[in-house]
Image 1: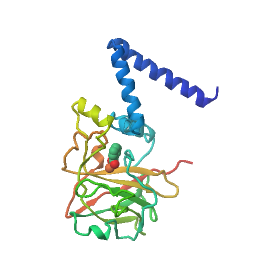
Image 2: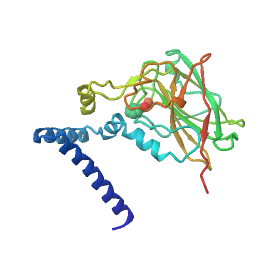
Image 3: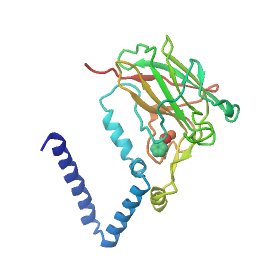
Image 4: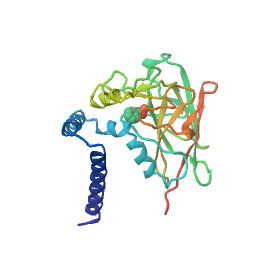
Amino acid sequence: MNADGRRLAVLVDEMAAAVFVVARDKNLTNDELLAALAFLTEVGRADEFVLLSDVMGLSRQVDDQTHASEDGTASNVMGPFYRAGAPEISNPGSIIDPSHAGADEPLVFAGRVLDALTGEPIPGAEVDVWQADGEGAYAHADGPSPWHLRGRQQTDAQAAFHIQTVVPLYYTVKDDGPTGRLLAALGRHPWRPAHIHARVTAAGYRPLVTQVYVAGGRYLEDDTINGVKEELIAPVLDGAISFNLALSPVRR
Ligand code: BEZ
Ligand code: FE
């Protein structure tokens, strides 16, 4: 057996052991087992395993572990709405599709991209952002303005980015399938607080995927995917969120 096979065997054994302990200690019934298996079958059919992992807090836990050795801005889960290939915008520039001009409260998302260890500026880094609008909706690929509130900007010579956007609103994760039913049965809500997603890349640095949360909004205390980290919450001041993004150098 190779190293991957051995790792798989350990993970399967230990997961089975953990589930076994619950089944034994809680005296799981056959009906409950069959209901759980039927539920998981439905989750698979609905393509909701990632969502289930998100609302169980497992995605957040694994993301934290994956990036534990990195310095700089805290990472955060990517979520299902990232789309590669967003339009490149100028700096300063806007990610508001012209057909939506004036629809929501304007916001500037600005800051600098810095080396997490030295604090040196990183000019030419790419800041790829995506977010919901003022009603909590993401633009979708098959919608009328597929790249609304999505865009990529390069930091300037001072490593600054300056993106004209709108204040996002909180929204619900998909809640019309088996995962939503589970949340309801547990008395949990499906809401996420307002946030802006960013994926930041630069040569010689580890890619950073994170979210910046709008201070003062609803659901910061009880995000349904437990994604909020205190250090990622930023206030809107004079129509702008100022937030520096620090990248961890690739270790050689
Ligand atoms: C999001 O932030 O876009 C997201 C993350 C996890 C589940 C659903 C949405
Ligand atoms: Fe989101």
